[in-house]
Amino acid sequence: MTTLTRKEILSRLKDLAGPGGYLEDRVDVEPFEVDFRKLYKGATPLVLRPDSTERISKIMKFCFETGTAVVPAGGNTGYCGGATPDESGEQIVLSLARLNKIRSVDPMNYTLTADAGCTLVQVQEAAEQVQRLFPLSLGAEGSCHLGGNLSTNAGGTAVLRYGNTRDLVLGIEAVLPDGRIVENLKGLRKDNTGYDWKNLFIGAEGTLGIITGAVLKLFPTPRSYGTAMVALRDLDASVELLSMLRERSGDAVTTFELIPRLAMELACRHIDGVKDPLDQPYDWYALMELSCATDEVQTQELLETLLGEAFESEVIQDAALANSGAQREAMWRMRENIPEAQSHEGPSIKHDVSVQVSRMPAFIREATTLVKKLVPGCRVVSYGHLGDGNVHFNLSPSEGDRDPIFLEQAKRVNHAVHELIAQYGGSISAEHGIGRLKRDELAVYKSEAEIQLMRAIKAALDPTGIMNPGKVL
Ligand code: FAD
Ligand code: MLT
Ligand code: ZN
Image 1 (cartoon, rainbow, N blue to C red):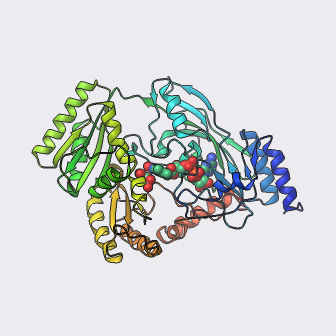
Image 2 (cartoon, protein in one colour):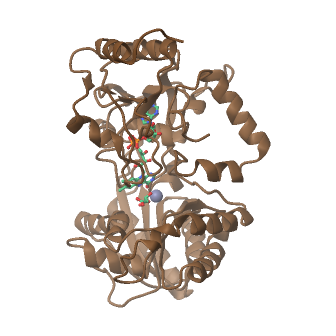
Image 3 (tube, helix red, strand yellow):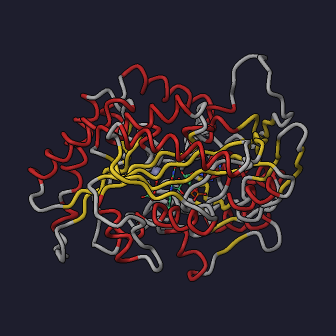
């Protein structure tokens, strides 16, 4: 352990971060001490903002030698408090914000190499410039970082077709807790040379090292989209429709998002310019999108044919098809603003759960009955990525209720819903990760052997436990 004083450690870290490479004034540091959902308020004496992998390597080597704990920070849009330091005031925050260059784009290899501090939109736009698609897409894309997306293995709205972030990565560059740089940025689609170590860092939420760059897979840009807001016969019809659309469209369904009536109402109430695209209210909707290599007319025809059949067979009751880019955008705006709209109705008790797609309707029904018994009068907004078997099963208090007692029930409700999800063979965190929020729940739902394996990996990579302590495990 070090003989340096805390002041000397901080001073040396500032030197290593270089000019403009750190923040220490309270006003600058404070945003890094609170998580996006304001669940945690931590404390840090210093936010480092190095601008190169080499600097990060030197910083980590020094932190390793001095036993200084490091919390990596991306865009701070994570939902589980993973990028927030604890209350001790001892942990240093390491922000990737200045490591933000697109390193290269190779349209023929369908790859893009970027620094971890690029925003997701920056990556999407760099791909668009060479007529390629980087399909990861989520509501926070303007501010979340690529490094945060990798570290949380983010999901989003195109997983059904393109997979989670993990599926979009060919290689990464990372700095180990002792400062060594490990790198595989060759952009190869086939490489069976031993352990696939990149996947240890993807989804590790900063507990094993710092991701500094990645080679990402690009895809052909679809020539046309067929987007519709459909009114479902009932909840079971969601799975029937999805299955039929996948089969009949040649698996061209990119998005299939479940939306309950209440979410539609809240979005119309709270989000400027959002309107219900259908004339009548329905209990359940799906926002669905096909993306195709055919031209617009053919895609619209395919969509109309498929939805016509769904109507005939009474799987759907009505549908609004987007006939222009503006209409498509309006439907997406409605969907992406559901979390924002719900936040105007008071605090929410949230769950981010997954089950097999086919079991989702039964789970939603049973979970709704369960929580209504636990919190009489609560309003359930169960929406999201049905195509991936993942919903955000969120509760709002009854209309106008602002009693803080509502949130005090969160732990009890979370646990009951997680018990149910376990009975369904599902997961307590489909896409938002574990962080600090679900750490204790993780220990309940993973087997002893899995936790031991995870601890062994942690001990091998971070033997002194300086990487994001208190998160995940
Ligand atoms: P941060 O919040 O900064 O960090 C997240 C975790 O990653 C922390 O543990 C941090 O320590 C670690 N970390 C960050 N950068 C690095 C790095 N370079 N190296 C090592 N560790 C690092 N998530 C989804 O999956 N799907 C969605 O559809 C979705 N929609 C959202 C919509 C909104 C409006 C908001 C606010 C959030 C949404 N999220 C969603 C959650 C969030 O945006 C994602 O988890 C995102 O991937 C986090 O990225 P970030 O850069 O903000 O990470
Ligand atoms: C979403 O799908 O909208 C997010 O993952 C959930 C949220 O932002 O609450
Ligand atoms: Zn989501």
